[in-house]
Length: 73
Image (cartoon, rainbow, N blue to C red; front, side, top):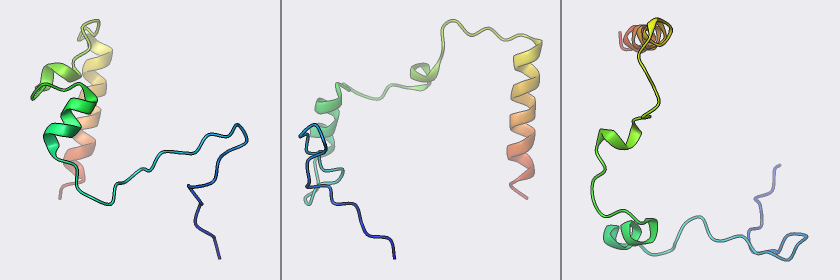
């Protein structure tokens, strides 16, 4: 049987990993403050300003959309 990882023990360098989850809920405004988010980012946050739509990328997008559409039936 696989044993759970002990996250309280220091690693070889003496670092103790931070807890991945908290015992208590953290308010959304506090999470936003910690992550430097001031509000909704919108779709522009995902855009790559260097990306240009060419024939190769158009075929890629068509394949991705066709693949996702076929999985919805």
